[in-house]
Amino acid sequence: MEAKVLDFNGKDTGRKVQLSDSVFGIEPNNHAVYLDVKQYLANQRQGTHKAKERAEVAGSTRKIKKQKGTGTARAGSAKNPLFKGGGTVFGPRPRSYSFKLNKSLKRLARKSAFSIKAKESNIIVLEDFNFETPNTKNFINVLKALELENKKSLFVLGDSNKNVYLSSRNLKASNVISSLELSTYDILNTNTLVLLEGSLEVIEENLSK
Image 1 (spheres, rainbow, N blue to C red):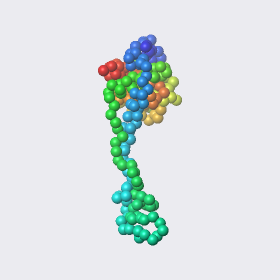
Image 2 (image 1 turned 30 degrees about the vertical axis):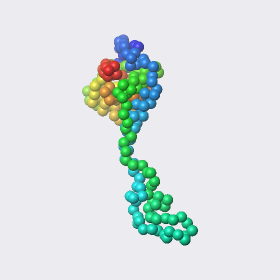
Image 3 (image 1 turned 90 degrees about the horizontal axis):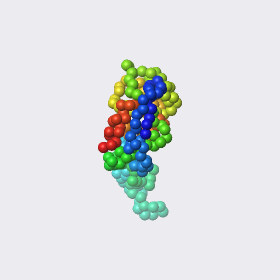
Image 4 (image 1 turned 45 degrees about the horizontal axis):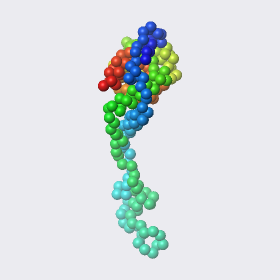
């Protein structure tokens, strides 16, 4: 499929690029997308949750009442989970939520995500640009030129660009990321995907392995 290349002023440069059908034109595999997004979100979890169990709460271990003759159930330590202030039964323990996925499945998920965005016409190809110094106002002007100032957008760079990244860092609705850091979640978690020309070759090379 072909896509026209815009400059950072939102004007058509008159050039077109060919987007690989093997990356941007496949039949999306929804289950692969689900698994990759699930893994990404699972990896964000710290897993440091902890509840004190019976052996860990503070309190005496003496028997709080006699075994028989009280008319109620027998009871031992005040740390019994049935009592207020007692330990938690089967409470959460620190653990890792991460799980493994094959590289081929993750590549399929990213291709599917790109294809979904392409099918929805939510991909813009932008010529490479840079700022002399970090300047948020300049980046906002780029968003306005592309009519993205009120939309959630993701700019994908071919290589890391400190000035462009720092210029966008204060904006909640817009993110800048390099093509090597791009994940399926990032692609889907935006309204418009802005691919700089330099990122296309890197993306297609990585996903054609």
